[in-house]
Image (cartoon, rainbow, N blue to C red):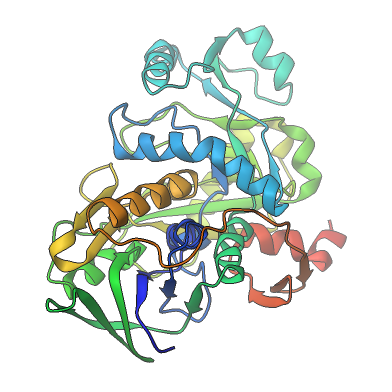
Length: 413
């Protein structure tokens, strides 16, 4: 444990995992600190597992920049590590004439953001593609590149590949205080498991990112958490839809989606609910019943089918919709905050941007050789809640992956 790290990353969600993977691959000596017992235990354990193209992101936002940088590279990562994904596309459906009037606006915004493949399709084409949809649709857009992945395995694999390349990952390690030593331009990070020293600290604290920033004497944003609930159907429903069925987005977000996971479960969600609780609450029955009614009103074949699971996620939103990626060279600090529902989609782009800030603004060169090559991982699922990646056992924390593993549940369907 002796020595100084080039970079210390605080937070082991998908963003922290992507940052340590990118930095380590490019030769940086890295340490990741996660306060929970397991990686991917907070916001990243309650997402949808969807890789979004950014079709509805603001054209000049940090979010769209990171997503666009991530998207092609994410497929290189998935293929290189041998991870599951399915590019099944998304169909955005307008159910009223008022919603139909928004389709050209969404198409234009998508093209302004650089996604030229978004196209309006006729109702006959819609029902040819999605025969299981309710016959009340009024119009639709086709977004071909939307993709689903295993969100837990993707994040864990980035952290695991970083470990294979020499990175250190410490869980159950709470950051308690930060001290910058100006005489040698080092940052001392005091934790529940001792002190660690790095040349740059990167705050990927997610839901607690504002609290971590305060430890460094910064307070430029506050986390305003948003809760999302999901209802999960069995794999026997997977034939009912061929793509992810999106509603018309609003200022509040993408809305409640009906989608298949990479393992075939059909999910309805997430909701968008105000909450003051950063800790993930359980699902509530009234909301789940509303999601069931919504799903049945859009996909007729869902009527009467059982729900096999529910789960809830909490997004680390802030007062603004865009990401906060801010560099403070005088403090040896980089903040990555406010990474909302597109954290998985933008994660590789975020890692690339952070690395360029470390080199360009903090003048920290990598102390090791590059190791950007990817090697397929041997993954063995160990029901009910573990997976072995190569020879390391991880606790599975995401319901999408847990549904894939619950063989006894599937045998009852």
